[in-house]
Length: 194
Image (cartoon, rainbow, N blue to C red):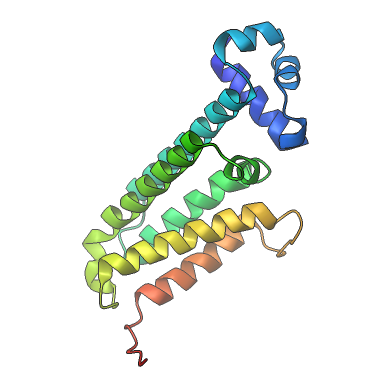
């Protein structure tokens, strides 16, 4: 039994039937293996879900890193590369991520937070050479806010695009979100009075 074959089958079952139809039996049938073969590798449904999540988050981390390495040598190029990498990953798995990100056990939450930290740090590092283009008072904070805003918007869109469509393709969403993030980063901080 190939682990990759089982994980691909598990992704398919999640994408087509959602968490309510995700059973070891359904994954086994899709993978063309026995239920027992899956139980020899996984203790149950939760461990299999965790493996799928780990695989998808690894794809997200790799996709973001690769995109940032080949980004255009400008602040807006780095932000666009980051946002489009997020959009590509979520567009391929928009039915899966909401199920994987809700109702998680502690180890699942920890892996998700690790992935978020990795991609945020990758963006901050890739944008360092263009720090002078960032006009916010605290450039590091501004980049972290931009990374978290892009990421949160992407997760929210994936979770709601079936029930609350916005009429945008994932590429259009990434273009608009990039423009918004770059506008924030390149505008001076405003003084607020309390």
